Image (cartoon, rainbow, N blue to C red):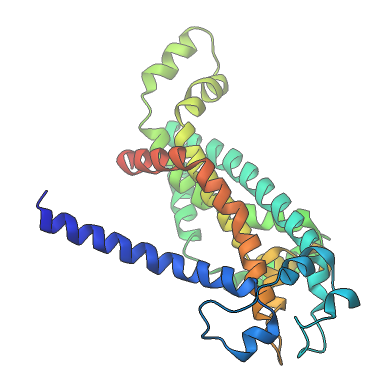
Length: 295
């Protein structure tokens, strides 16, 4: 490669990394400052004092001991929802894990059926599946709430899990169908000659060969479910069923924005997805590459 081109690409990579990392670094610095310091000077790059009170409040409630001192000396109240942050963190973890498992399971079965049983009505269903991805969720807000209210699934984690799975399922089928279609049929036919059923060949042949793309899809589904705000906001009105994005919204009030607390909450919410991507990075990259080639 030409040295000039290599230098230009290196500089572009450095600029891109700085552009991506700057908001995260700024949020980390803001989360270690009191609200009084932040409100007095938002342009300070390295403030003179730091505090962990924002993180203590996230996991210790909003009692008077936490409100005392200088961190919220200029604020008369804190949102009640912040008392449920640890519960919201657990709710988000339960919902995202359940949605990921259900979406991968159902989309794998549906995609395998579409890829192997080339029936006309299945292709029509696949076209409807693709069309469903273009319908904005906000259009379905009122029907979604009415249906889940009538069947008694509002204010419950189960209702949120079912709704998110339903909206993410078309995406999973769309990703897995071309991948399954390109897996050689000869391997499955050989297994069936040896006495393996079609479902058995799916479990023992197709799924093991599809490990990287399943990990990639699972990572994408988990992050999409973790970051979802609209469905939990529609289906849950009680604070004990709130998720992390709903807590973040509650920190932006009509008269005050709790910037330090908001940044601390964002960093804690970012941690599970970052750790997940770092642990599964090799499988995610190989799965996305394989999916791109097979599609």
